[in-house]
Image 1 (cartoon, rainbow, N blue to C red):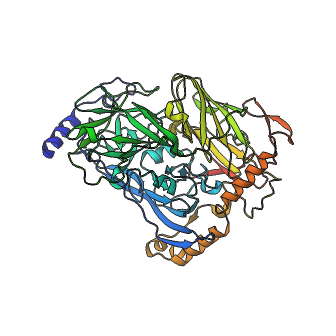
Image 2: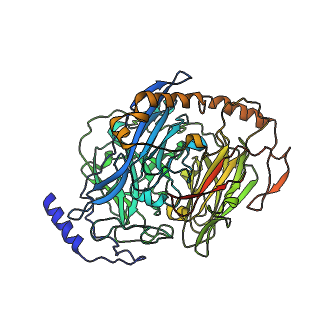
Image 3: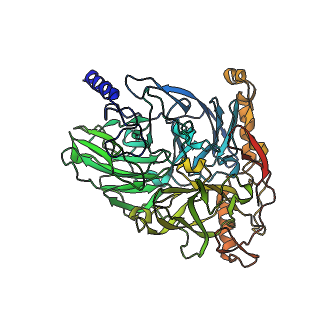
Length: 616
């Protein structure tokens, strides 16, 4: 049977396919691919190389990732596809982290272009957040210091290098980073092989099996792709048991959005209900049953799906036709297939009584805050902009200055019917409080969730509210259609310091480009022989340096100090009123940081920069 499938696939691959963009439901841009013939790969978990004791009695773990080229057989019978992955894997290895155990991850660049790593969903300090201009060139490494102190959630790590984020992520620089805690453990959720991370991405291929290259083809709008991958393989299948599974959906692609649903082989066309229970920021307030799930680029949603009624059958994850403004192709309505067996080997953590109605107390910020900033995401004369500003205009780069710990409401607007924008705001968890136009309302599962990516669909306007804490410093926000991001739909906000907070902090992390945290060069001989900066002593010294910074250990004390501060302060009470970039009156109660260093701004090449100062 496998040989017949491969031969059939080769016949299809040799068939002519349409190579023009746009296209209808029966079009292929890539060579035709035989659906549901390859098993779903599960990325391996990565372990720390060693651990040192932290100053608060916890542990600090050290990991190392080698970013390097890899060739993968994607199409049977065609050339292997050249990719670039974390540890030479696509997707990269999965980090499974425990709340309270901080980590340092050294990313070593053996790739052919610069990169910058963003841990998406983490409140990392600014120098470790993956600032776009904070690049690591080939032959350099950077140590990223991560807190792992938030509640349990599905995070992910991916490239964020200026001008080349789409290219780097498209070729494979992305992976899961899963944080657990005791509160989530107590729910008894499906675990082990019943906990499936599923990263979804759409790509396009050339006739020889190589990736269609967005940069070489001067793509400036979107790469919707006609080949849907799950965990790096097109349209895979996975054998499951007739019991409940935890499915962690992550849209790891660069442009395409999805409207997912489940369908049984014995009831084609009928959607099977499932339960959404977690979002970008972890557990929702309560579980929500739905028949379909919207998920745009960089969003994470977690669901419980019960296969117990479908023993001996197939369950297919489908995608709707005509989602947002995305182009449809021959098989973009198909995602993956589950082949349901007849026996259960382990019935533990199978939620016999279902999920509790109250999953956790979600720290929603107050929604009555006035709208502080209004941002329009639009295209003007072929340029992707936020309020008319672009990243390369450094004097316009910082578009908001929320005081540290303040609650603010922002309005995000997309007045176009031609494309949608998944908007990611770094550092904070946000609540979507309203949506007008487009889909017209906040989805039921969005209402009970905190998010860090908000899908701004065609002709939509949404309002989001967040508490800008726990840190001060300069962070990014942008469209996560990575083609848009690379073509400058990328801005920054400055969480301004509270000069009268009254809490002593020995180290400040305002500047995302602070020199002492930047990437450094290494010799290949040192890397191979584990000498120089790669000895355990040198690494231990670096870890102890990070511990001495007290970057994260006292976050609970800081949060408490911020709550106390804002219980007696009113936004704007002691500040000079000003107009922000959105034209909404904004009053800052704080002094803007003055410790920002000279930043480097892209000159459309991640390997060459020109110096200019960030505004404060």
